[in-house]
Amino acid sequence: MVNEIPDLVVYGPKSGDVLVVGWGGSYGYLITAVRELQNEGHKVSLVNFNYINPLPGNVKDIFRRFKKIVVCELNMGQFANYLRMKHQEFSYEQVNKVQGVPFTVNDIKEKCIKMLEDK
Image (cartoon, rainbow, N blue to C red; front, side):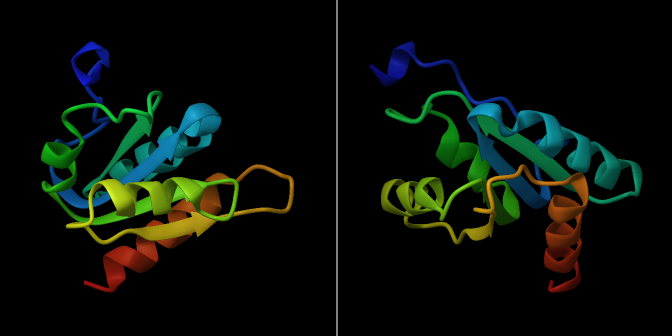
């Protein structure tokens, strides 16, 4: 079945300092935050999963090209935990929000900047 799932697309440089990971409807505010960070000179990229079971076949190849990975989700971190099960060789930071409102672009940017400062 994994051969039928389209490859994951990287928005931005194909390697870098931080990879922002989202899934489903999170794309809008994540791509805006990533583009703003890129315009400020940061090596930050985005992947947004549309298929999670099975995961696209190129996930491992993409993840290994980034120094840090942050999973952003509007829940307690179920997708981050799923990624930890499927690809244990990577470390995942998280941005979670459960107040019933979406992220702001600044929520994402602040976390990425903090990760970039913690090199």
